[in-house]
Length: 257
Image 1 (tube, rainbow, N blue to C red):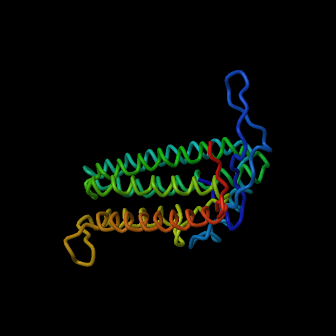
Image 2 (image 1 turned 180 degrees about the horizontal axis):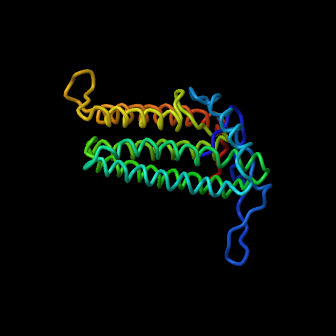
Image 3 (image 1 turned 45 degrees about the vertical axis):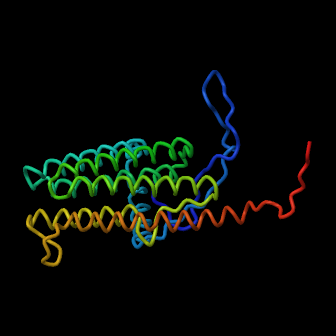
């Protein structure tokens, strides 16, 4: 997923596609700009870091290479969590893979914009399909890791999908793409997950404030509650906004046969 700061643009389809030789096509003017909103805790620092890195990457490194790196890194992160069931070094490796995922997933869009090599429809579609697959890899690895109850991992994946769907629908209907909720975005989630992994690597028996609750189980339940609350709040707010935007006339004339 490419990081943006406040009011950077994404693209959203607004007219029907035409079909040519059985392949759906659409000109660039069939997309309108949607405002991307990134208001997470790390947004400003991350924007500067990505700009610095993008300006120094070799020309042979393309955005597709970085997208692929992010995808592979998330698959490996899930695999490392699964490995942690037998060897806790998997937790350390998972933290490294999360860092690689951030590098590839956040920098691909920065490179495309810097070099004026943007493909808005392709990028939007591929980026979020990869996010979905990456979430599946990650939650599957956590479910197999032994550090989190598989039911909590499943709940996190369901909550993630629900929040993602709400975000994409709001992007299409309202032209506003929120990359963060309640000051938390993908980078903050990676940091928290990597930090928890390092704690468990150093202290395998770590519990929450001396309680019998495992660190990742407690964190997973908080994540489910948080994403669920964000989903409900956004769905209610956006439903209200759309209702106000598309109010029906108060006095509708009716005809009878």
